[in-house]
Image (cartoon, rainbow, N blue to C red; front, side, top):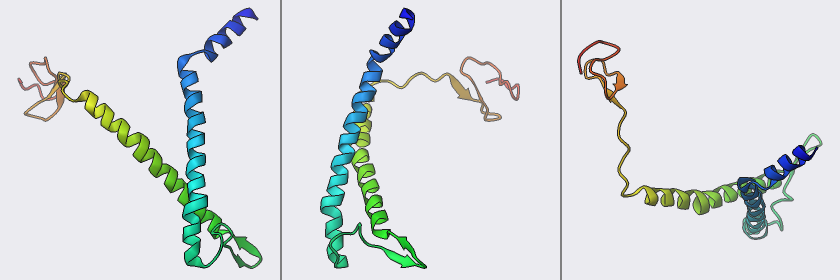
Length: 136
């Protein structure tokens, strides 16, 4: 039993598990802020053009079935806003940072070359092509 508890303790105290937990909490808080922006600022502006007080309450009915199209549009706007925010505030800066870190570093040496005869990929040290037996 003691081994199980020690193993569980080691699992919980791993650095990457703590990092993941922090990322999830911050991500949820970020989504809450973006959802609030959409719900409290963007959809009321859209509702102005519809002449209604809230986009979320917009519905239509067919044969007794109620379709809440306003809620759907609101959720689509929230999704697009979260995706755009993640892209512009996480993905783009990360790509620029990794590009900047790679700048000035030499490209890794090639380990393969192309046979001029059959255009197959062969090891750089090869003296003959393994596919067409031509000297390279």
